[in-house]
Length: 264
Figure (cartoon, rainbow, N blue to C red):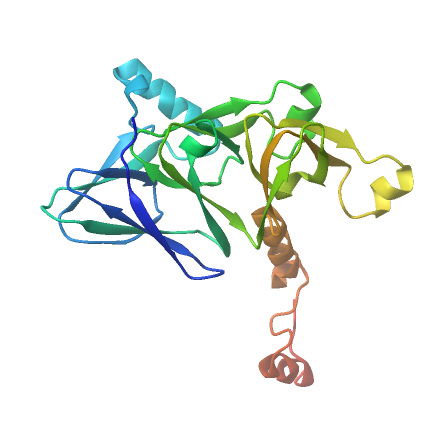
């Protein structure tokens, strides 16, 4: 294997974290800010890009960092290396309610395409890059734009998504239509495109947006039930300054109304 061979264990249900076990001198890379806890004698280091060999030299590192900026991620990633004599553990937590999905890249031909904010952590050696969607319709209307993340290598990687996750294996020619925001990840063999819903009434009043993603097999896709954008929009709409209730559904809220308080 070109990647470090790490062991792991998942904890929790809807607010999961992953505990990675590192042998001496093994390293895991992670998104900045995803650390939950770690044992003593684990060295943490901030790096440009993902630290793979194809980013050697100043220009390679700058190019790798620039790609991460395009996907909306931080310029930096963090490495965690076991510098002790025995096994050590480091844990990473998902940033919002949902699931962490372990991916053995060696079992899916060494490449996974995922939404741009899905990556959480991976064994050192996994390359975290960008995947351009070549079709104009996919780029403008696909929710993720022209760019998605790609993970390449033969080691373990961990991605996260919101709500409940459904894994579906598509047969050759089989088509699955999903909300653009609900697509989490897919193998490289899946053909991904955007399709107009059709019908003025459906488009204007259906509440599901104007476009959905069509995924054509063969390959495997992972779908999330609660995209973070959908969760954030509901929270934003319910905020007091947007007309939502300050104490909705609570005793304090009812008392506030009884006393004639201002709910703006």
